[in-house]
Image (cartoon, rainbow over all chains, first blue to last red; front, side):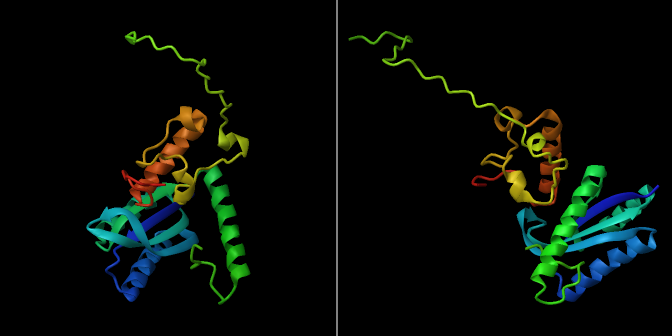
Length: 129
Length: 89
């Protein structure tokens, strides 16, 4: 039975842009190849951390929302632990209220994106205003 | 005149603070899910040191106090909220 999960992870700021993109696509492939199906993806970009993690005060935040089998989450987290570019991650199962909420949030963000619509931004990499 | 110990007499009766009826904001505008991803909203439930405010001050119901606490702990894990700080607001 597929549950809906939401995972947020933080990449070290020391990465160059290409490495960061490569890390993100690597995890996207892990999810899709592992039988998961990505529902939504958000990139919060470089953000200041509330407290230093591994002596770093900023980090690249990235969010994936996906549907997957429960067993799959374990393999995903092993991948996270193995990759040293990830300094922190959190996976979380969405209950029915959470799913509803994320639905609403996604539409709101798309509305903001289309309304802003300066450049043809793809819905997936929408920057949080 | 020797002030008598311990027994303080006030000129005017101490006005007891009128008790404002507290309500649970989640029930009132039926929010069902507390999102751990936006720290601005969660900050209202933290005091200056970044600690979670008790229910008797915020007036939230038990069910939602637990959801808020869970969300705050997740936000702290993701460094969206500090564990302890001095000037949060």
